[in-house]
Amino acid sequence: MGRSTGCLQVAIAVALLSVAGRVAAQQVFMAGQAASPRVVLVELFTSEGCSSCPPADALLKQVNGMKTASGQLIVGISEHVTYWNSLGWADPFSSSVYTDRQNAYGSSFGLDSVYTPQMVVNGRQQFVGSDKNLLERAIRAEQDQVQPVALHILDTNTAGNVMTVRFSASGEKKFYGADILAVLADDADQSSVLRGENSGRSLTHVSVARSITRVAKLQAEAEQTVELTMPVSLSGKAGHHVILFAQAKGTGRVLGADTKAIP
Image (tube, rainbow, N blue to C red; front, top):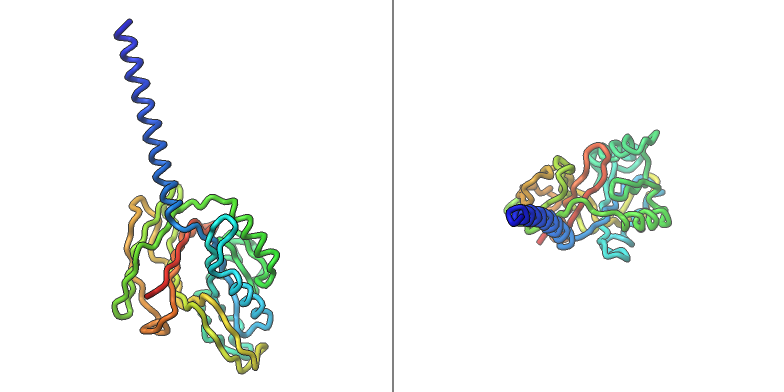
């Protein structure tokens, strides 16, 4: 009887240790999420050649850097596409990289064609980029979502035209292999448009992407270091920042993000 009781006590102790281990691991993961900024990523596909885009540019300016009611940081990215460039005005901030990214979203969302201005929130919702009501609704919906990946930029260092970024990214195993992308962006830009639909207008933009690159994959090892080549437009100038975000393959869902000013 005593021996049986002892075995039972050992079994219970082992079970409790196992449960405690799982709870501790979950607490560590949740603590990592709490320590890392919870972000709503708002991508705006825009063009200086499009007369419908300035109101969307202004809307992004209103929300960029603000916090939601639940404390999430709203991080905007202006991504200037190229397909307006042949219609009177070549957008100086445009790149085929952003056109390709928008086309990928178009396929993911099942759209017949892409358009400007278009906003995409956390890779999950898309709508006309000047529609404030739809943007507010999308942000509210994201407040109820658990951010699957805790991503945090630990530090950056720039030497010449190379920026070294050290970051941590952790999440459940099912998200391993997700892309981690880096955006180098101007804090703000202004342009005087001489031709096209916005001829004669002075346009302003915020968080203007100057490069976007896949730099890593989400993996078991949380801490990673990557090197980014600084675009010529950023070299030796103030007023820029870096954005890192993890994005699921296939669905395009943004799993976690962080941003940091470039000294």
